[in-house]
Structure formats: structure tokens, C-alpha cells
Image (cartoon, rainbow, N blue to C red; front, side, top):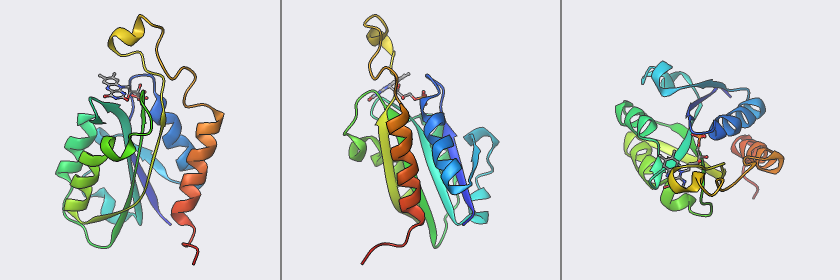
Length: 154
Ligand SMILES: Cc1cc2nc3c(=O)[nH]c(=O)nc-3n(C[C@H](O)[C@H](O)[C@H](O)COP(=O)(O)O)c2cc1C
């Protein structure tokens, strides 16, 4: 299965670690939005979209890229992120999920884990989610990647 991962990660390069773990499992190419042609997804069977979370959604750079994608048919996508708060995947992923679905993608799975966060006043406190993504997060990201390519159990 030919897989492309489009990832934007800058705060502590947290999401980049998740992208690498998924890419290792799926044998994917990993690119940033700025180096990806919006028509590129048509050359792949599965396309992953991931970034850190800023003010409750994926980074604007990634959302803007998703907005530029042409409509697709029969194309699978997956969504991932890292964030200071966890357990809010449904809300955090809403904007990106809606854009991808409006373009015709089927979202086959979603993954989120904690990512070291020193934004704003959190810096004074030494940050939250220190050490994340950790080894366990990376293992879970690999398991998530495997679930994307394993046939669903009856
Ligand atoms: C400008 C900014 C805004 C953020 N907003 C949120 C937020 O709304 N919710 C949250 O849980 N984490 C928030 N974070 C924390 C990041 O999502 C988290 O640190 C993430 O792992 C960073 O990913 P990256 O290192 O791949 O860029 C914010 C971080 C920054 C820099």
C-alpha cells in the first residue's frame, strides 16, 4: 500500500516523532505541506495528515493545505496529532476531519497522544506532557498504523 504522510510539526517536533513511527510501520513518505503538491494524494492509496494542536485544532498550515486539496474519490485518509491536553481527539480533529470529508476522503482512523507543551504561561511552569511522545506513545502509534492496514475483524 502506497502511503503518504503530510505532517507539520514545529513546537517541539513532537508530531514529527509520531509521523516517523507511523511511517516506519507503513513504509510511508513523510512530507511537509509546503513541499507537497495538493494533487499528490491521487498517487497514493492512503494519506495521513498530522500536526500539533493550536487553539483546539490542527495547525493552520495543515488546515490551509487541506483546503487546497482537490476533490477525490475512493481515497482513504488518517488523522493524527499531539497536544498538551489529551482525550479530546474528537474535538481537536473536527476541523481537519470535516475538510477531508468534504473533499471526498474516507477517514479510516485517528490518533492523538500527549506532546511536550511549553506554550505561553506553561513555559513558566516547566511545561506539561514532559517526555511525550514517549516510548509507549510511539508503540501505540505503531499499533495504530498496523490497524490501518489490517483487514477489519468480523
Ligand atoms: C501556539 C500554540 C497553541 C497551542 N494550543 C493548544 C491547544 O489548544 N490545546 C492543546 O492541547 N495543546 C495546545 N498546544 C500544545 C501543542 O499542541 C503540543 O505541544 C504539540 O505536541 C506540539 O506539536 P509539535 O511539536 O509537533 O509542533 C499549543 C501549542 C502552541 C505552540
